[in-house]
Amino acid sequence: MLEKKELLELSVKANAIRRHIIDMVYNAGSGHPGGSLSATDILVALYFKIMRYDPKNPKWEDRDRFVLSKGHAAPALYAVLAELGVFPVEELLTLRKVGSRLQGHPDMRKLPGIEASTGSLGQGLSIANGMALAAKLDRKLYNVYVMLGDGEVQEGQIWEAAMFASHYKLDNLIAFLDRNKLQIDGETEQVMSIEPISEKWRAFGWEVKEINGHDFDDIIDAVEWAKGVKGKPAMIIAHTIKGKGVSFMEGSVHFHGKPPNDEEYRIAINELEEERKRLMEELSSLGGAE
Amino acid sequence: MWEMASQRMAFGRTLVEIGRENTDLVVLGADLSSSTKTRLFEKEFPERFFNCGIAEANMMGVAAGLAASGKTVVASTFAVFATGRCYDQIRQSIAYPRLNVKIVASHAGITVGGDGASHQTAEDIALMKVLPNMRVVVPADAIETSKATRAIIESEGPYYMRMGRSDVPTITSEDDKFELGKASIMRDGSDVAIIGTGIMVSQALKAAEMLRHEGIDAMVVNMSTIKPLDEETTIKAARRTGAVVTAEEHSVIFGLGNSVAMTLGEKYPVPIRRVGIPDTFGESGNWDELMVKYGLTPENIVSAAKEVIKKKEE
Image (cartoon, rainbow over all chains, first blue to last red; front, side, top):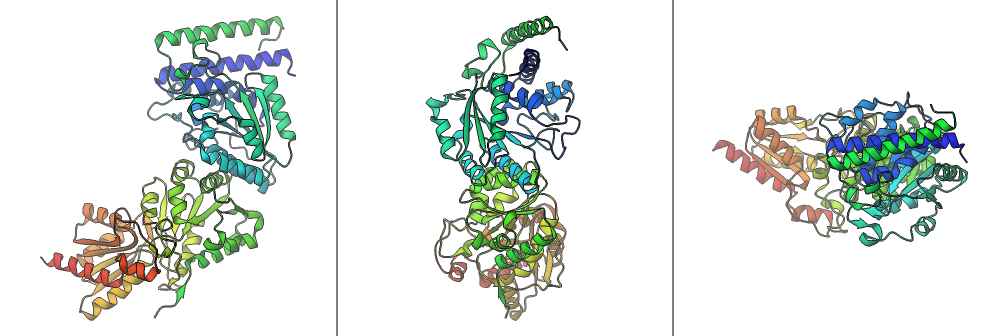
């Protein structure tokens, strides 16, 4: 269990990331807020607590890798990298603009900190396989983290990659499934059912754990568990809420790939600001605001 | 007559040689390692060979991940699967991020023979050459295959290299210089230039000999790199002869003939004819019979040469 203070600090960070996400997609006039917001807490836990990572040296050979296979959640990853100091926070508002390093989907050749160019769904797990394999070949101790969307596992390549990871015993590979239950056309179980999803991954030779993807303790414990799995890859199925943190975006398929309008933007920013104030008050009552 | 030798075997043996020097070389296969001859590498370096099973899309992604971690990767399977089945994986995960992956495909073209249209591909060069950052290499014989294998592995970034299934005539020698992006003039001539690639270079040489008996002096160019095209040699050949024939075991729509025609159309227009597989799927048969049926013989090149010469004289 995290200390209350540390938990609050991560919550403050996640709040800032969510605010960046809303700012970015509103400014860009397009983008994917829903799946970015559902992935935020996992990304915050990974980059601010779990991963061995040096923001000043994003090419450090021994760093843990993170592959965002659901590339459309790029705003969340960009915001995290900017908050870490990998590139300037001011650059976030260039998202999707001509000449920007912040492409609509991540481009590893343009922006530091991006480990793989993704966006065409289904490919990130294979890339993560290759990275995990390279670590084994080089006897390096880094872990490779990868995040899949739940709609994304409808792609056949995911299951090719799932077979490969267990066949080659890639126990340095830790996958998250952002199980927010929605894809563009509606609920995953309506569009193309993926359940029983835990059983599928187990049948493919993975160790599987289901968690609440918005609970930092849950996320951190699950990664500790995954690191302890030997001889197999680990899948953490994170139950999340699409649009998490903005009331009218929560559980809404409408905001999968749509930015808020002016009025919605104002409401969203107000909500996030209220939440920030609440967290800061709680933090200061502990006598430890940063 | 020329000796016959296997391009696949030359590729497999060269991989083993390079594997001894370059410990960062990793080779991937997709259940066809005995056919593509990556099996030779697997036997020598089992710890650096990974069979991906019949799952080519994942193989391309694994290649990308290894390359992003500093490895030089060769991913090999049949041309039809390498390029067609994995087009999006190559595009998104390899070409777009310019990763150091060499896609080396065997069993290209119609000379696959008995397996028929499902396993023959006349589209692979087209699919690969249209991708930004991708370079396309088609060696003419076993000796050139060996040199090309070494060259693409030594050169950073993505490459597609194409080989046939059948043994092909050895028309180059160990001493010939091979350079990526540079064509070689196999035979000088002033009446017509035949620009060939892959196994069609030997057919072009046969055609040139037939033309000689009719008093026609044909130049033969081996265009071993399709992209980037050696425009300088292409234009030089057109300027010297004023009539060009291209020859390839690939669809005439978007292969070598298309690249040459575009270049000459814009920079040095001369009469041109493309010899290649017409806009159709192939079929089962002995490879030499298929070469006849699909218009890939020296006689086809000869008649195309006469057509362009006639046009030039009009």
